Length: 339
Image (cartoon, rainbow, N blue to C red):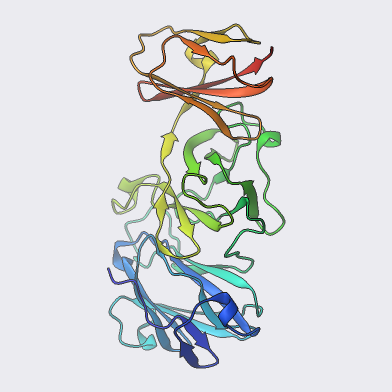
């Protein structure tokens, strides 16, 4: 596992050691590479720009920083297996032309092996030419979601404004025209949905804990939903990519099944509520943890090892989502807080 960036800046045929955006001239663009090819034959890749080796051995589930490259110039990109000696060993040759001053992302995906995979997705680079290295506002985190896993093309990945409730397009945060979610830096969920909007899984997105104020990040699905049908490759997860590159950060899965209180015959009363919420369970519950989410999608309260009663008297009036984790199973409902 080398992940060596040999030349940080490629500028009109000459390389330089600096990658600071304000240390380059106006003709420069920036390009980040993300290796998301879950093919055992390509655990590491070499990257050539204009025939010159710029990244030696980029590992699976790793990313480069944003490399400075000539803008408004057709750049030849070659991807070769690790330990290649020249661009002539390339398994993929493509090109990209980035506008000067802009940033782009090149996402490596698919596979080169001709058998052993459920879907035949040829290895390639997918380009996104409106990338950001920092957020537009210091108090937000700008989040780009790119769907790139080879065996789950039929899913949607969303950021719900009220996680855990009934799926409804009106309660999802919406990306801007550039494709980024501009989220006030806090704690969120990211959910994967089937085409009919059935919830498949949910992941924690702890932007505040990761201190991502003013940052721009990319989320990608990586791995296989059905590893046994795909050469026993890595299991599916959602991963966070930083603009500074390095290993992709796995997001913690909350559950691959979240049930409503009604589905589980859990009773919650009273609702609306002034001070205490009471729960009645049709099953024995040993460990009960609770999370309360406001209408903006922010976590406002978190409780560990609660009993069958919860004191919410200090909450402001409003509508809230409550998520219960009971012995590793997840349940959700809504309640109204009133004085």
